Image (cartoon, rainbow, N blue to C red; front, top):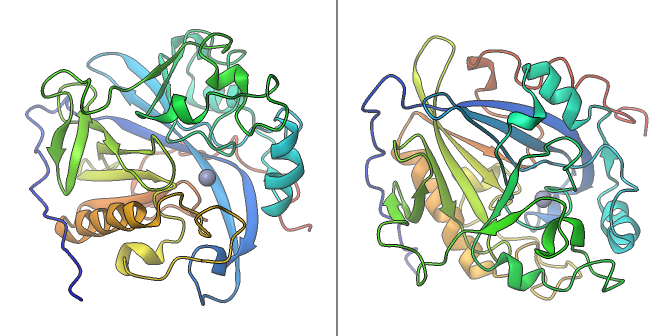
Length: 323
Ligand SMILES: [Zn+2]
């Protein structure tokens, strides 16, 4: 059966030398599982990171994080996360804290305005008010109805009330509007994606509605520059894709024997497949695109950018190479 191709419209060129964001990537630890968790039939172990990305937009003087990765303190999670998920993925946190990473960037935590949660899984978010006292958490449409029963009120919930309970959260949390409730032109087409939100209004940073992994799943498309001034688009793909093979092989079979309702790592495999096809179309449609997965072991083309890209603070990952 022919596979539907995602249509790609050209990505918007910058209208000014200012219309870019900068990205800094930081390691937050490692996880390990079989590669077959991600792609059925793939042999070997996956030793993957869990990245957090610092985004800065100079014209608006806005600083934000896209995902926070894993906390350096694995005991600061709901019991069900510690007992099940951290063990399944053999999680090993980095030693660097969010404070260390801000220090490496020479940025005050109080100057960070937002944390964008690609989705509500534990390895992307943790309570961060102590580091980012003025930040607002942003999440994709549908997240808060999924996470409404939070720990500790619901003892075995995977969702930490300090983040996801709007009445009790440490930081204010705001869900992006759905297509139905959003103002006109809030969501617009960008590249191969039907719904992108032009966050700064200058085409430099789009939050992309990227359904399939879980409700409210987001990715982000960033227009940035290499250290020699060449334009690069970086798609922060979050958990839309777990193995880089999917970028070249969007029809690769999902791992299918997991103890989840769908049997795979995505809650809606058909929607996840559609999102993967669009990401693949983005990559093949513009040679300037890099795709950075939340759980890649390394980030393609990272050598083209200025340091620090998670350079100094992320050295000395606890436990790595010793287990
Ligand atoms: Zn994840």
